Image (cartoon, rainbow, N blue to C red):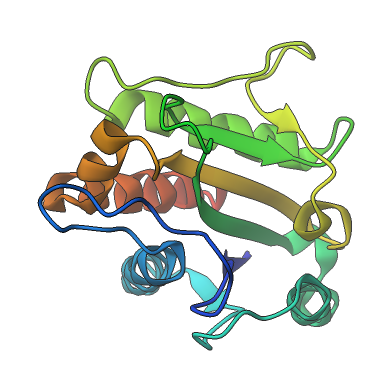
Length: 197
């Protein structure tokens, strides 16, 4: 199985960062997701998984180009033999929302099954009390979303919002060594399970 990693947004994308906290720390989504993506890629390669990041640049690569890259690879290896994982951090603009969530495209597909794997791993790995934001209206935990990276890719695809960067508690956890290790572990273990490893 081919795994495609999309670390969305670039250093030139407006916003997409936490507030600057009283201790001077700040999370930049482009930098954070690239660090997580590289660590996930490295660990998966060590486990023998065929994995590729579709965005290696630090600049903001348009969604149309990211989908084009993913589709070219998916068609080459076989659409049914490919999974795209888009890694993000959430924001509410109020600083009050918190938690982890996962999205798939509208309707039922293989992506929903894969998303449930990620959900189960996240629930098991996060510390007690971490909010899990699910949408159970169609009897599974993922949100059905009309995001281009989900809609315009030919292969199965999930988009993960790894906690809220504008919530101080969520953000401090994300920036901690423990938090980064947990986020990486969720991605790696979920993908290994999906790939049958």
